[in-house]
Amino acid sequence: MITNKKQPSTKLRLLAGITLVALLGGCATFSPDGGFNSVESVAKEHLGKEVKWVKTDEDRQKVYAQVTAILAKPLTADDAVQVALLNNAGLQATYSNLGIAEADLVQAGRLHNPGFSFQRLEKANVFEYERKFIFDVFGLLTMPTRTALEQRRFDQTKRRVTGEVMRIAADTRRAYLDAVAAQQTARYMDDVRDAAEASAQLADRMAKVGNWSKLDQARQQVFYVEVMSQVARSHQAARSEREKLTRLMGLWGAGAQFTLSERLPDLPAAPREINNLEQTAMSQRMDVQMAKQEVEGLAKSLGLTKATRFINVLDVSYLNKSTAGEPNQTGYEVELQIPIFDWGDAKVAKAEAMYMQAVNRVAEIAVNARSQTRGAYSAYRTAYDISRHYRDDLVPLRKRISEENLLRYNGMLIGTFELLADAREQVLSVNAYISTLREFWLADTNLKMALLGAGTDSGMSTSGDTAMPGESSGGH
Image 1 (tube, rainbow, N blue to C red):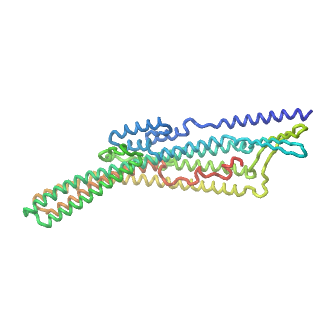
Image 2 (image 1 turned 45 degrees about the vertical axis):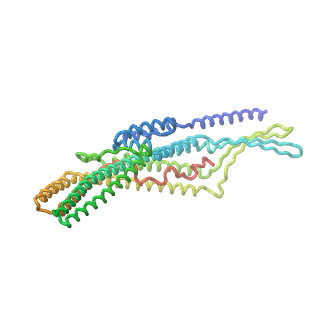
Image 3 (image 1 turned 60 degrees about the vertical axis):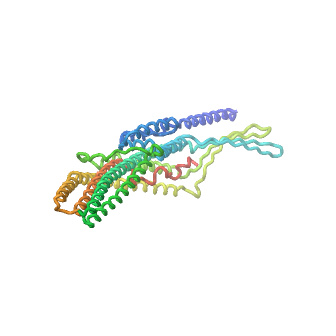
């Protein structure tokens, strides 16, 4: 009688437990945004740009319309960055990492499917039937920890995707500056070519009437040939830089026929002054934040490994056995590995080594971040001073010298060779100013990226892709 009263109670408790676990497991669902909202907010805050995760044909049509509208007018640097963030296929592929990481997170919040086995035995015309229901208890016990670990990896993935957005934006801005500078140089070289061509024709006519010597005519021809070579190189450089920008913006066909701005932006009236440069970088650099988060996660994983070092498998089974002509037998079965050969010390040692590795990498990243920020700001200030020096001093002085030489040439105080040499110096000084202006804007972009920790090579190699011992086992 006592046995008959316990059987329903045990079944009810087991059924209630399974129902509770099923409800807990069912709580793990996908988020509406897939983790993309954080990427959007960071891009808007630090870049002032819109990013779009293209998932449907409707999204694709909207992006196409946005890109087409931007390309309808001459591109600025901000326009180029916006097109790249919307249209770069590689960036769209990176967004898929969010979906993969979130799927792992949801999977970690769900239990392994219960198992059922059926066994039939025969002995002297006596049949025995054994039914077993298996449930992963260890997976249930470690589910909160596994979920926390996958949440950490999901957060890291969001940071990485955000960093990739920053990198694409920075690369696009650099490519835009290179393309505009190359185009500006090529256009200036076209003007020089026209002047050299006119001078060469004039030299030929003067030589024919005997007003120029053969030596002066040859010098003029050499200058003309040199200019033509420089023009060809400048146009090739402009085409090459434009193609780099085109690739980053993900354009092809008619979209690749975009128009760039005529010239680089002017030098600002004054350079930026940043107070507490290193502190600012430490508080907002993404690589530093990722490193800190990695260490915190590894510390939790180390605790889990120590707590479960003896346990690999813990399964509980509900049994139901029946024999022909006899009452059914019920019970349960617990399966647990005995730690005789493996005491888990290797897993713990590996976890401790990975934790200390991460701690040291955090220190390394912090030191590198401070150094990179100081270096980027120093390069920014130097580029500004040099460009301003060329704009305010060197180019005006070179122009004044050219004007004086022209007067002297008209007064027959200098010869043709001196005038041509001065023309070469004028060309070099103007091209040098364009180059310094380009270098300043590149330094400005590099400083912004250094403050954000994006596009640097100091990322941690032991990121969320590396699993701690026993992390991914899910209790098995």
